[in-house]
Amino acid sequence: MLRDYERAWRAGDAAALASLFAEDGFVLQSNRPPVRGRAAIRAAYEGQAGGPLQLRALAFAAEETSGYIIGAYGYGNKADDTGKFTLTLRRAPGGPWLIVSDMDNANAPPRKR
Image (cartoon, rainbow, N blue to C red; front, side, top):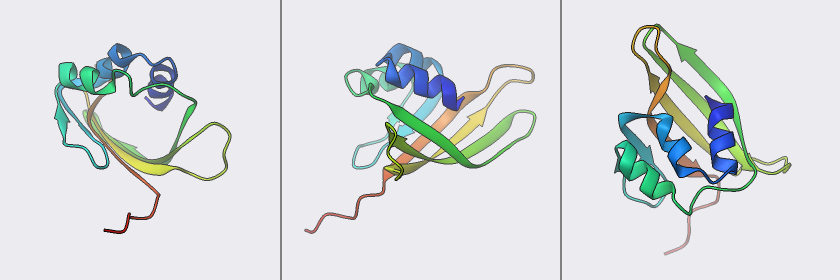
């Protein structure tokens, strides 16, 4: 899942990114309203995707039809992570894993008000 996400992101392919999600999936990004559904996810990623995204799992688990990945992300070969994420996953028995929710937030300190 992480390698497929990286490939689609690097290619700037919003359609390929959206195809990784369940039809009723969510994208929950920092400082943005929630996005729900493949069409809305594709629209949200149009023009946003692209660049040398690097994902790494910190923890994960899966059962027959549900799972999760907790991870960190960065760009290029930088040693420091830019942020962290959680992916919740589901599948029909024997089917492909799909993202139900993708929540991420940056490691940057909060901005002063």
